[in-house]
Length: 125
Length: 125
DNA sequence: CCGAATCCTCCTCGATACTG
DNA sequence: CAGTATCGAGGAGGATTCGG
Image 1 (cartoon, rainbow over the protein chains, first blue to last red):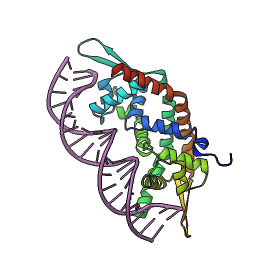
Image 2: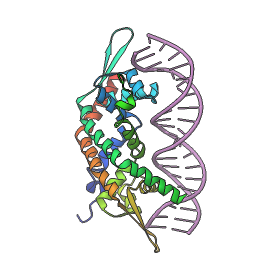
Image 3: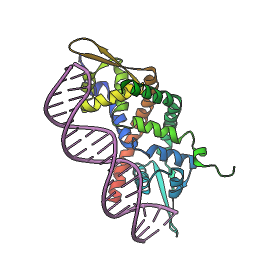
Image 4: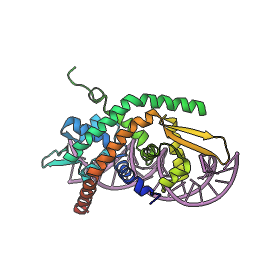
Protein backbone atom coordinates (compact mmCIF):
# COMPACT_ATOMS: atom_id res chain seq x y z
CA UNK A 1 0.00 0.00 0.00
CA UNK A 2 1.27 3.41 -0.94
CA UNK A 3 -0.32 5.58 1.73
CA UNK A 4 -0.45 4.21 5.23
CA UNK A 5 -3.24 5.55 7.37
CA UNK A 6 -2.59 7.19 10.70
CA UNK A 7 -3.71 4.21 12.70
CA UNK A 8 -1.00 2.31 10.89
CA UNK A 9 1.59 5.00 11.18
CA UNK A 10 0.93 5.86 14.84
CA UNK A 11 -0.42 2.62 16.23
CA UNK A 12 1.83 2.63 19.25
CA UNK A 13 2.07 6.25 20.06
CA UNK A 14 -1.41 7.59 19.83
CA UNK A 15 -3.69 5.32 21.83
CA UNK A 16 -1.42 4.55 24.80
CA UNK A 17 -0.47 8.13 25.41
CA UNK A 18 -4.10 9.14 25.38
CA UNK A 19 -4.90 6.44 27.90
CA UNK A 20 -2.14 7.58 30.18
CA UNK A 21 -3.11 11.21 29.99
CA UNK A 22 -6.75 10.37 30.57
CA UNK A 23 -5.96 8.39 33.72
CA UNK A 24 -3.03 10.20 35.29
CA UNK A 25 -3.42 13.66 33.82
CA UNK A 26 -5.61 14.72 36.70
CA UNK A 27 -4.34 17.16 39.26
CA UNK A 28 -3.16 14.86 42.03
CA UNK A 29 -2.67 11.21 41.01
CA UNK A 30 1.03 11.33 40.20
CA UNK A 31 1.86 13.37 43.25
CA UNK A 32 -0.06 11.02 45.53
CA UNK A 33 1.80 8.07 44.05
CA UNK A 34 5.11 9.81 44.66
CA UNK A 35 4.28 10.56 48.27
CA UNK A 36 3.11 7.03 49.00
CA UNK A 37 6.34 5.84 47.42
CA UNK A 38 8.37 8.18 49.61
CA UNK A 39 6.62 7.14 52.79
CA UNK A 40 6.36 3.46 52.03
CA UNK A 41 3.22 3.17 54.08
CA UNK A 42 0.98 6.13 54.74
CA UNK A 43 -2.35 6.92 56.33
CA UNK A 44 -5.09 9.13 55.03
CA UNK A 45 -4.46 12.15 57.20
CA UNK A 46 -0.73 11.82 56.78
CA UNK A 47 -1.29 12.38 53.11
CA UNK A 48 -3.38 15.41 53.91
CA UNK A 49 -0.61 16.87 56.01
CA UNK A 50 2.01 16.21 53.36
CA UNK A 51 -0.18 17.63 50.61
CA UNK A 52 -1.98 20.41 52.47
CA UNK A 53 -3.88 21.89 49.57
CA UNK A 54 -5.84 18.81 48.59
CA UNK A 55 -9.36 18.50 49.94
CA UNK A 56 -10.58 15.37 51.68
CA UNK A 57 -13.10 14.84 48.95
CA UNK A 58 -10.54 14.91 46.14
CA UNK A 59 -7.93 12.94 48.05
CA UNK A 60 -10.53 10.32 48.79
CA UNK A 61 -11.62 9.98 45.18
CA UNK A 62 -8.03 10.04 43.94
CA UNK A 63 -7.11 7.19 46.26
CA UNK A 64 -10.18 5.27 45.26
CA UNK A 65 -9.34 5.59 41.59
CA UNK A 66 -5.73 4.56 42.15
CA UNK A 67 -6.93 1.56 44.11
CA UNK A 68 -9.42 0.64 41.41
CA UNK A 69 -6.63 0.80 38.85
CA UNK A 70 -4.52 -1.57 40.93
CA UNK A 71 -1.78 0.96 41.60
CA UNK A 72 -2.15 1.14 45.36
CA UNK A 73 -3.28 -1.18 48.16
CA UNK A 74 -5.73 -0.10 50.82
CA UNK A 75 -5.52 -1.88 54.15
CA UNK A 76 -8.20 -1.25 56.76
CA UNK A 77 -7.61 -2.06 60.41
CA UNK A 78 -10.73 -3.07 62.32
CA UNK A 79 -10.23 -0.82 65.30
CA UNK A 80 -11.44 2.41 66.87
CA UNK A 81 -10.43 4.98 65.88
CA UNK A 82 -10.18 3.73 62.32
CA UNK A 83 -6.83 3.21 60.68
CA UNK A 84 -6.24 2.84 56.96
CA UNK A 85 -2.88 2.37 55.35
CA UNK A 86 -1.97 2.90 51.72
CA UNK A 87 0.95 1.31 49.94
CA UNK A 88 2.03 0.90 46.34
CA UNK A 89 1.36 -2.26 44.37
CA UNK A 90 4.01 -3.62 42.04
CA UNK A 91 2.27 -1.94 39.14
CA UNK A 92 2.28 1.30 41.05
CA UNK A 93 5.98 0.95 41.80
CA UNK A 94 6.69 0.40 38.14
CA UNK A 95 5.36 3.85 37.41
CA UNK A 96 7.65 5.61 39.88
CA UNK A 97 10.80 5.74 37.72
CA UNK A 98 8.84 7.40 34.96
CA UNK A 99 7.39 9.98 37.31
CA UNK A 100 10.91 10.66 38.56
CA UNK A 101 12.08 11.20 35.02
CA UNK A 102 9.27 13.65 34.49
CA UNK A 103 10.30 15.41 37.68
CA UNK A 104 13.89 15.54 36.55
CA UNK A 105 12.92 16.93 33.19
CA UNK A 106 10.89 19.59 34.94
CA UNK A 107 13.81 20.58 37.11
CA UNK A 108 16.01 20.92 34.09
CA UNK A 109 13.63 22.63 31.70
CA UNK A 110 10.67 24.12 33.50
CA UNK A 111 12.41 27.37 34.35
CA UNK A 112 13.17 27.95 30.71
CA UNK A 113 9.64 27.02 29.75
CA UNK A 114 8.17 29.50 32.19
CA UNK A 115 10.53 32.28 31.15
CA UNK A 116 9.79 31.59 27.50
CA UNK A 117 6.10 31.76 28.24
CA UNK A 118 6.48 35.10 29.96
CA UNK A 119 8.49 36.51 27.08
CA UNK A 120 5.87 35.26 24.66
CA UNK A 121 3.08 36.81 26.68
CA UNK A 122 4.74 40.19 26.95
CA UNK A 123 5.58 40.13 23.25
CA UNK A 124 2.01 39.35 22.22
CA UNK A 125 0.05 41.28 24.79
CA UNK B 1 16.10 20.09 63.28
CA UNK B 2 14.16 17.12 64.48
CA UNK B 3 11.06 17.26 62.35
CA UNK B 4 11.54 18.22 58.77
CA UNK B 5 8.55 19.80 57.11
CA UNK B 6 7.14 18.48 53.88
CA UNK B 7 8.66 21.23 51.83
CA UNK B 8 12.00 19.99 53.11
CA UNK B 9 11.18 16.35 52.70
CA UNK B 10 9.61 16.63 49.25
CA UNK B 11 11.32 19.68 47.81
CA UNK B 12 12.18 18.02 44.55
CA UNK B 13 9.22 15.83 43.95
CA UNK B 14 6.22 17.92 44.73
CA UNK B 15 6.57 21.19 42.90
CA UNK B 16 8.03 19.95 39.60
CA UNK B 17 5.53 17.19 39.14
CA UNK B 18 2.68 19.58 39.73
CA UNK B 19 4.11 21.95 37.17
CA UNK B 20 4.41 19.20 34.63
CA UNK B 21 0.91 17.91 35.21
CA UNK B 22 -0.51 21.40 35.08
CA UNK B 23 1.11 22.14 31.73
CA UNK B 24 1.06 18.82 29.90
CA UNK B 25 -1.75 17.01 31.64
CA UNK B 26 -4.28 18.42 29.22
CA UNK B 27 -5.93 16.19 26.68
CA UNK B 28 -3.78 16.76 23.61
CA UNK B 29 -0.37 18.35 24.28
CA UNK B 30 1.70 15.19 24.57
CA UNK B 31 0.07 13.60 21.57
CA UNK B 32 0.60 16.68 19.44
CA UNK B 33 4.27 16.73 20.41
CA UNK B 34 4.59 13.06 19.46
CA UNK B 35 3.01 13.60 16.08
CA UNK B 36 5.14 16.62 15.25
CA UNK B 37 8.12 14.53 16.28
CA UNK B 38 7.05 11.73 14.00
CA UNK B 39 6.48 13.98 11.03
CA UNK B 40 9.46 16.25 11.56
CA UNK B 41 7.64 19.14 9.92
CA UNK B 42 3.88 19.31 9.82
CA UNK B 43 1.15 21.73 8.78
CA UNK B 44 -2.02 22.60 10.63
CA UNK B 45 -4.41 20.52 8.60
CA UNK B 46 -2.01 17.63 8.47
CA UNK B 47 -2.26 17.49 12.23
CA UNK B 48 -6.03 17.53 11.97
CA UNK B 49 -5.96 14.60 9.57
CA UNK B 50 -3.59 12.63 11.77
CA UNK B 51 -5.61 13.41 14.90
CA UNK B 52 -9.15 13.43 13.51
CA UNK B 53 -11.00 13.91 16.76
CA UNK B 54 -9.44 17.17 17.80
CA UNK B 55 -11.33 20.34 16.99
CA UNK B 56 -9.70 23.26 15.21
CA UNK B 57 -10.26 25.41 18.24
CA UNK B 58 -8.50 23.07 20.62
CA UNK B 59 -5.71 22.20 18.20
CA UNK B 60 -5.10 25.87 17.66
CA UNK B 61 -4.92 26.70 21.34
CA UNK B 62 -2.80 23.63 22.07
CA UNK B 63 -0.29 24.67 19.44
CA UNK B 64 -0.27 28.22 20.71
CA UNK B 65 0.46 27.06 24.25
CA UNK B 66 3.21 24.74 23.10
CA UNK B 67 4.73 27.58 21.10
CA UNK B 68 4.48 29.95 24.05
CA UNK B 69 6.24 27.37 26.20
CA UNK B 70 9.07 27.15 23.68
CA UNK B 71 8.43 23.53 22.81
CA UNK B 72 7.54 24.02 19.16
CA UNK B 73 8.42 26.46 16.37
CA UNK B 74 5.79 28.05 14.20
CA UNK B 75 6.88 29.16 10.74
CA UNK B 76 4.48 31.19 8.61
CA UNK B 77 4.95 31.43 4.86
CA UNK B 78 3.77 34.71 3.34
CA UNK B 79 1.78 33.26 0.49
CA UNK B 80 -1.75 32.54 -0.65
CA UNK B 81 -3.15 30.19 0.39
CA UNK B 82 -1.45 30.41 3.77
CA UNK B 83 1.06 27.83 4.87
CA UNK B 84 2.20 27.27 8.43
CA UNK B 85 4.71 24.69 9.51
CA UNK B 86 5.30 23.36 12.99
CA UNK B 87 8.49 21.73 14.22
CA UNK B 88 9.94 20.80 17.58
CA UNK B 89 12.42 23.00 19.39
CA UNK B 90 15.33 21.43 21.21
CA UNK B 91 13.40 21.69 24.46
CA UNK B 92 10.49 19.98 22.79
CA UNK B 93 12.72 17.22 21.51
CA UNK B 94 14.09 16.67 24.99
CA UNK B 95 10.62 15.73 26.15
CA UNK B 96 10.11 13.03 23.53
CA UNK B 97 12.06 10.23 25.23
CA UNK B 98 9.97 10.67 28.35
CA UNK B 99 6.75 10.56 26.40
CA UNK B 100 7.97 7.40 24.74
CA UNK B 101 8.66 5.86 28.12
CA UNK B 102 5.16 6.74 29.21
CA UNK B 103 3.86 5.12 26.05
CA UNK B 104 5.91 2.03 26.66
CA UNK B 105 4.68 1.79 30.24
CA UNK B 106 1.14 2.08 28.98
CA UNK B 107 1.65 -0.73 26.50
CA UNK B 108 3.01 -2.96 29.21
CA UNK B 109 0.61 -2.14 32.03
CA UNK B 110 -2.51 -0.43 30.79
CA UNK B 111 -4.32 -3.61 29.92
CA UNK B 112 -3.88 -4.85 33.45
CA UNK B 113 -4.95 -1.50 34.84
CA UNK B 114 -8.14 -1.55 32.82
CA UNK B 115 -8.93 -5.13 33.71
CA UNK B 116 -8.28 -4.42 37.38
CA UNK B 117 -10.58 -1.43 37.19
CA UNK B 118 -13.34 -3.51 35.69
CA UNK B 119 -12.97 -6.17 38.35
CA UNK B 120 -13.07 -3.49 41.03
CA UNK B 121 -16.17 -1.93 39.53
CA UNK B 122 -18.07 -5.21 39.29
CA UNK B 123 -17.03 -6.09 42.81
CA UNK B 124 -18.22 -2.81 44.28
CA UNK B 125 -21.22 -2.05 42.10
C1' DC C 1 -5.50 27.10 4.37
C1' DC C 2 -5.19 28.71 8.97
C1' DG C 3 -7.14 29.92 12.27
C1' DA C 4 -10.43 33.46 15.53
C1' DA C 5 -15.03 34.20 17.73
C1' DT C 6 -18.94 32.56 19.86
C1' DC C 7 -21.67 29.58 22.47
C1' DC C 8 -22.49 25.77 25.27
C1' DT C 9 -21.83 21.52 28.07
C1' DC C 10 -19.57 18.59 31.06
C1' DC C 11 -16.81 17.52 34.79
C1' DT C 12 -13.11 18.31 37.83
C1' DC C 13 -11.98 20.49 41.81
C1' DG C 14 -12.66 23.15 46.29
C1' DA C 15 -15.30 24.53 50.58
C1' DT C 16 -18.16 23.22 54.01
C1' DA C 17 -20.66 20.34 56.97
C1' DC C 18 -21.61 15.94 58.72
C1' DT C 19 -21.20 10.62 60.03
C1' DG C 20 -19.50 5.77 61.76
C1' DC D 1 -9.55 8.93 62.05
C1' DA D 2 -11.33 8.31 57.71
C1' DG D 3 -14.05 9.32 55.04
C1' DT D 4 -19.25 10.79 52.61
C1' DA D 5 -22.88 14.41 51.15
C1' DT D 6 -23.96 18.52 49.14
C1' DC D 7 -23.29 22.69 46.73
C1' DG D 8 -21.07 25.80 43.76
C1' DA D 9 -17.57 27.77 40.61
C1' DG D 10 -14.41 27.55 36.97
C1' DG D 11 -12.22 25.91 33.08
C1' DA D 12 -11.34 22.60 29.47
C1' DG D 13 -13.07 20.93 25.52
C1' DG D 14 -16.51 20.36 21.44
C1' DA D 15 -19.65 22.23 17.49
C1' DT D 16 -20.35 25.73 14.57
C1' DT D 17 -19.65 29.86 12.13
C1' DC D 18 -16.95 33.50 10.18
C1' DG D 19 -12.66 36.07 8.47
C1' DG D 20 -7.88 37.21 6.14
